Length: 273
Image (cartoon, rainbow, N blue to C red; front, side, top):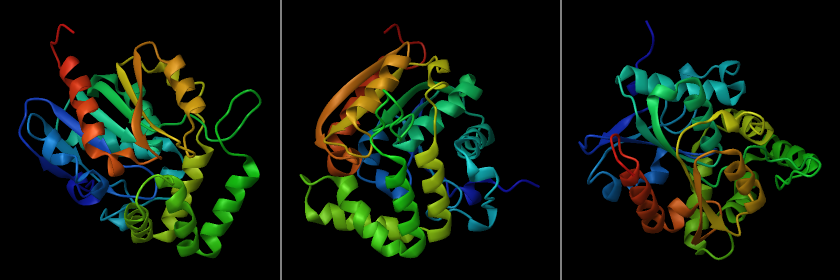
């Protein structure tokens, strides 16, 4: 008997609106990153949050390193959550690598999705010829090696890079603490999946309205990489936020929530747009 996603993925639900928003956290964190946005989003919508298998308070015994060796395993988590609840036409909001995980799920099961919002997404993090992803291979290799050698030191190094220098030290410290909550071995494999992802040739198969929210001075997902995704999509809107860094949902939750609510309202099922 398959494990219920309530247990496997620590699913939580808020609000009772007619339409559903599904919030998917990025690499190295868990669903707690959405807490500041849930009150605003759940006033008019049903909101679902969850932890990917292996992250946060998910059931670690359900983690399979083979299944979760690519973004497809994480996309299957999303599909299972929606199928178990018999949900279709949801509005998916994914941070960082979850933008591409959500794209993978929506390409495989378009019936499940009405729209997608991607916060700081990247189809490929490595520089490759004319394509600028932001990282050289040796930089990624050094990052993965540091994770193996000293996970806490890696978290201390990554936190200020991800949050960006313009945000308060308090937010950087909180983000570092979030990184340290997760299982080091599993998070290291998720890092490998994240930084080796390559959806450049596949993202154009996504035929849903997409909102892309991009923080300024984001060194994890640089603007050029985000613009690449925007150019591949037939129906997308790119917003350069006032917020800085790779985690605008943490540093500027109201700004991010307002853009999501505007976009979702315009694309509700049956909306004339």
